[in-house]
Length: 260
Image (cartoon, rainbow, N blue to C red; front, side, top):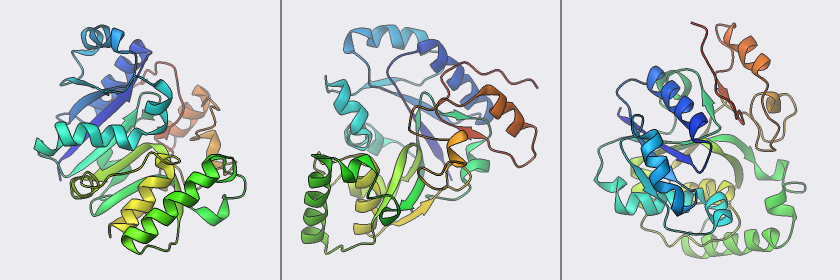
């Protein structure tokens, strides 16, 4: 099973270099490609700073930083249509710059995602729909209903519906090839679109309990969250001392040094 990593980043090049060093340490021989979401004027700076760590950097051809933040799956599809479809791989890991992975992809993911997608924080939407921003606040709530209707009319999909989180998701090449054939609308957010389209297109959708089990679970959020609650180094060190402790943390926005 051949894996590749698409490393999405936009700033903090020193921290990115540290993340990439760790990814290479735990996954020797795995190809890592950069997906640049920063200002185009800094692209050359990024290429020079991270050349030792990345095969190359692909610039997302969109100027809006908000669009690039909200639509990681559409950025991924742009890259895949132009570059990715020509590469040999079975599974692609989309890794954010502030995601800290301290073990091999094989150990963390196993075979999850091989037949479709494996998503962090995969949660039945009914559990969080009433207080989750993407489904409770306007205009997002209306966009979500519009997206549901479009998918229902095109594919006959009536649910169940799921939410996920963005950092750390893994995609089979078979799914990307099929997803890239669709005209995916810029509605709501990738964290709703990805599980919705994967199911509607007939792919297996699985969670990643070794990374993040349930969105907004207070216990989980000390290790992984998308609420800008920075993970503490002491928490990471404590988990590393446990043989089966956590090995994935988000968001962590400092360099991290292994003690052994």
